[in-house]
Image (tube, rainbow, N blue to C red; front, side, top):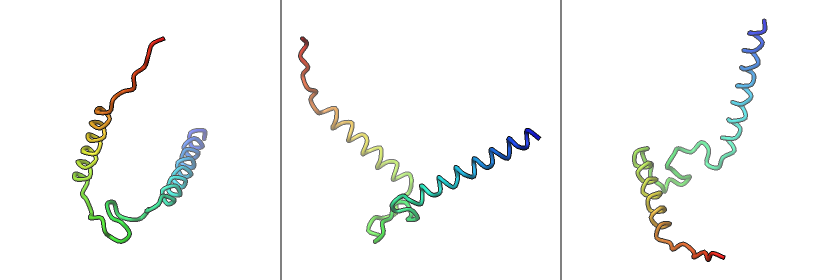
Length: 77
């Protein structure tokens, strides 16, 4: 009996979390629109490999730009 109640309570908790997650995803702007597209269709659909490569290039460029910036001098007292 105790095991059944434990499993039942876990199922209820998972259902509540699922409903909350569904509600949060529905609240995101652009929910329901396919990945890589915009409302007016101006952005072409990109496959996951191309999207990953674009993200890698963006991160690499950001890191390189950050490395080029001079660090401020800190004077010891």
